[in-house]
Every structure is written in C-alpha cells, then in structure tokens.
Image (cartoon, rainbow, N blue to C red; front, side, top):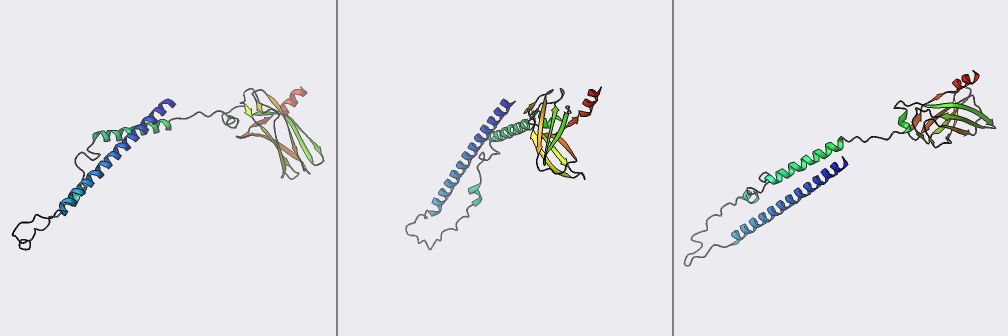
Length: 233
C-alpha cells in the first residue's frame, strides 16, 4: 500500500511538472509572437509615404489612416489555446485523476493504533486488583503501602503510578501524594508493591488510592475483603 501511494505521488508530481513546463513554453511563445506583431506594426506606421516627382504633397493630402484593429494584436491564433491542444487537456485530466486517486487512497488509510494501558480499560480488559493496603504515621508524615495485581486477563501496563488522596473528619480533601509502582512493566499476572509518602498531614480520617499511567486513569477493584474472607475460612 505504501509503495502504491509513493508511485502515485511520483507520477502526479511528474505530470504536474510536465504540465507546468508546457504552460511556460506556451506563454513564452505567445509573448514572442505578440512582440513580433508589435514590431511589425511599428515599422509599418513609421515608414513615410513615397514622394512623387512634380506633385505637391499639399495638393493631394494623404488619405486618412485606417484604424488598427487592436483586438487582433492580442487574439490567440487557432491551435495556441489550451482548448485547441488535446495533449494538454489530456495532461490536465491525467494530473487531476492521479491527485484524486492519491487523496482517496490516503483518506482510506486507517493506521491501527498500538494498544496502550490508557485504552485497555475502554476495550473491556480486566481492571487492576488491590490486594492489600495499610498505613503508618510518623509525626505529620503519612505513609501508605500496598500491593496491586494485574490479573491474567489484564493488559500490559507500563509506568503505573499510585495516587493517594487524604481527607479530614469533615470529608474535605487535605493532601495527596503519588509514587510509581516498584515494577515499571506490569505484565498480566504480575504483582507489584507501592509506597506513597505524604508529608505535612495533621488530620487523617480516611484516604483513597487510585492508579494512573501517562494515558490516564486505570480502573481497579478492591480485593482485600475477599482475601480476608478466604483467610478466615
């Protein structure tokens, strides 16, 4: 497909260049022909009438000058216009046809986009799974650690970042922090821990974690309750 487009483009450029050259030649010939007409007419007008011996020029005044057909000096001779040249018309039609074919071929190309982590959720792949999470306080610093799992039916995820939002007693947002997962590439079935440290946190009632990549947010489900039930059983 790429080779065909390249060939069509080269043909279109070559035809356009040929048509431009022919048009330039026609324009130059027209200018030379017009200049020759002007020179011939000037020489005729500047030539004095022949003198007749014994006859006074005042006795027989010269006949009035005939009007010059100005329009005839700029009319094109038959066969010099584009309409009178079938080869030029065929070249114009060919160039237009090639341009239309190239435009249609390029418009029909739909390059397939490589699947990314940002589009995986939109395609219905399995979301990430939060396997565990806990927190610790040291002064005004809050540290949240956890474990996230990419299920076997999930898509490959790269450069996943864990984001933690902190809320106070009234439910208002107070602070946030983020940190990348320990694994840069998370293949289906892989697990990776994460550690997010948030300084200058005075009051913490609850916090929430989310995951994102360079392409946007990633869906995730909390599996901690299910794992707790399985452990109790």
